[in-house]
Image 1 (tube, rainbow, N blue to C red):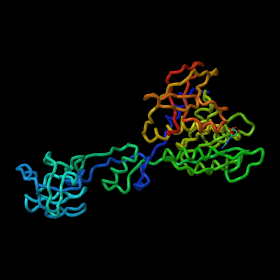
Image 2: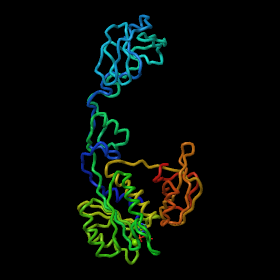
Image 3: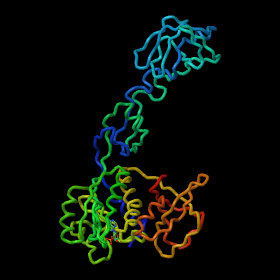
Image 4: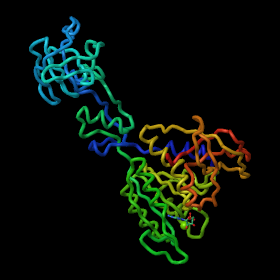
Length: 398
Ligand code: AMP
Ligand code: MG
């Protein structure tokens, strides 16, 4: 058995090697950019009017003129017009190009309009006011996004503005999720007294989706030969297998030996942790990777959040920030194991406080919905004092 730190170290030495692919803009949220992005025009690309109102020549105002005759109107999306008489004004709309021969925009709120006569009521007009000048934000050919950036909703706007309808991003691993267990039936079925509906695959699929990874779901009964033939076929189609169940000491826990038969080299089997102790991890020469997680729902979930999610992001060169939280009350845990305590967190004056949520152990799926994440308590002691700060693995934001 190895420690949690050793397990993380081994997993993160066996990363998936991404390729690049072209993806439609509508699908790139949460993906990692694989090309530098340059401005194809100035931002903004023309002197942009920022208020609805009138545009004047500032020198007219400066020489004392306060009333202007409307010469016409410049609408957004129209070609640039020209103010012919410097004593006049042009009505302008937000988003329109600034008319030629004008250099100040005065909003309607500061005007008295009577037909075509416009009187300015404000006495503090400045040259270039309410004009977003061409190139003020970004100049043409300037780099605005760099390779390796994780695309959030903010980046989507920039990509759209520079005309990237198709974006080069890093590929994500192809994943198959496989649940094992003779006692499990599908969600659609009515379980008999001694059966349960299988939930892990659905949790894993949804959790992967949150990390930008799509996965197929399979279920295999606890039969050695069946497991071998099914896994042999499935592994050909994917980069990663995530299994749940069948890795403990039960009579029908065939997963480790079958993976071995399929050419996967065990990197570890057993981590000094609760939940998730029987966790098995292996790789094959062709760089295919297997996470074989214990089937208890909380174990499966914890192992995903602690190991698989960071592995996915590390593979793409993205370091997830490590949140920390302080225990809100004393907590004791007697065993020499790293304990992943389910906690609910509360932000108290800018500090994250973690309140233990008592559960019934690693099978207590319902408890997960009362908590926000796991507080990682170290193995080397059994008393954890209120106020002490530990790594917090969050799975809920609200
Ligand atoms: P195992 O790791 O196969 O020994 O399973 C441990 C416990 O987790 C057993 O009580 C299983 O019924 C349960 N379990 C295993 N796989 C799943 C699953 N996919 N969904 C829900 N519970 C599961
Ligand atoms: Mg089982």
